[in-house]
Image 1: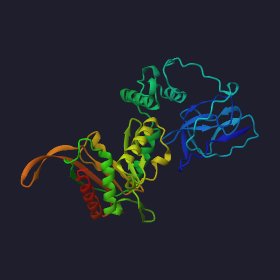
Image 2: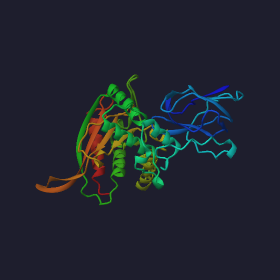
Image 3: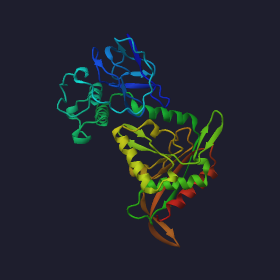
Image 4: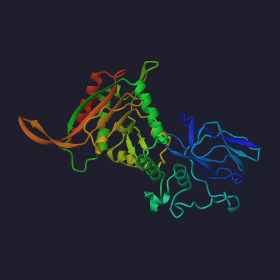
Amino acid sequence: MSVFALPDLGEGLQEAEIVAWHVAEGDHVVADQPLVSVETEKAVVEVPSPHSGRIAHLRAAVGERVKVGAPLVEFEDAAHPDTGAIVGELARPPAPPAAARPRPAAPAAAGAGVKAAPAVRALAKQLGVDLAGVTPSGPGGTVTTQDVETAASAAAAKAGFEEPLRGVRRAMAAAMARSGAEIVPATVVDEADVDGWPADADVTVRLARAIVAGSAAAPALNAWYDGKTMTRRLHQRVDLGVAVDTADGLFVPVLRDVGARDAAALRRDLDARLSEVETRKIALDDMRGATITLSNFGTLAGRFAALAIVPPQVAILGAGRIRARPVAIDGRIASRRLLPLSLTFDHRAVTGGDAARFLAAVIADLERPA
C-alpha cells in the first residue's frame, strides 16, 4: 500500500483541520479528484488525489487537526509514491466518469431537504447542528459554512458550555497572543473635520488614501520591525490590511500598492476581497504581507480605541463613528461632522513624533473635500 500525506499548504502553514471527506474506504478515485476538504487558519481548501487508485484506509477523522506530512489516505495501489505536491488555489476538476465516481452517501435524516454542500453537511454533523433549523444565506437558499458556524456558536452561547476555538478564531487568538507578548503599544488620538465630504463619500477609500499620505510624511509607520535582531524594514509602497469583522472571526485582506491606485480601482479590489471573505474563498496570499492596517470599527460603534498590532507591522489606524459635534470656528460654535481617529504604534520602532506627524498628515488629507 502507498500512503498519501497532507501536502504543503503554502505560506508556512503547519497543520489543518479535516472538514469533510469526499471519498470513502473502498472507493476508486482518479488523479486530481477531490479527496478531502481541510480548513487552514483562514480558508477551506480541497486536497486532490495525487493519482488514481482504490482507497484502502482514511487515516484522519472529521474535526481532527493534521500536521503537514502526516498520513491522510492509504491506497491499495503502491505504485504511486506520495509526491508531496503543494496545494494552492485548486480549481474543481471535471467530474470523473460515472463508474469512477465516489459512492453517494446515504441521505441525512436531519436536514435532508436542505441545500448544502457535502463539506457543509459534514461540518453540521460535527458541530451537532440540525440543518433544517439553519437560516441559509447562500445563493438560492443554500446553507453555507458560516451559517452552520453561526448556528453552532449561538447554540453554544445559549447552552453556556465551552467550545474549542477553530479556524479563524484560533488563528486570531494566536496572533493576539503574539502581539501581547512582543509589541510595546502606545496610542495617540485626534479627530478630522469631514463636514465638507460629499454625501456619497467612500469612507474606507478615503481612509486608505489618507494612510498613504501619512506614510509619506512619516515612513516609520509603514514598516516591519524584528525585535530579535532589532532591525526594521521601511516599505516603499503601502500594502494595506483592512480588518473585516465576520461571524467566523477577524479577517484582514490586503489591498496592494494603495498609493498607485485610483479610488475606483481600490473600491473594486476591496469589494472583491470582501466577497471572497464572505464565501471563505479568499486566497492566503491575499491576507499576507500587509505593511500597515486599517480598522474602520466605527461602522459598528465606538469613538476611540487602543488597537492591537500584528507583528511585524508597527502601526494600525482605527476610525471611529462619524458624528456631528459642536466645535469652535472663528469664535463661534458650529455643528461639524467629525471623524475620530486612533493611531496605535509599536513604541520600540516608532517615536511619538513619528506618530504625530503621521496622524497630522492623515487628518490633512481627510479634511480635503474630495
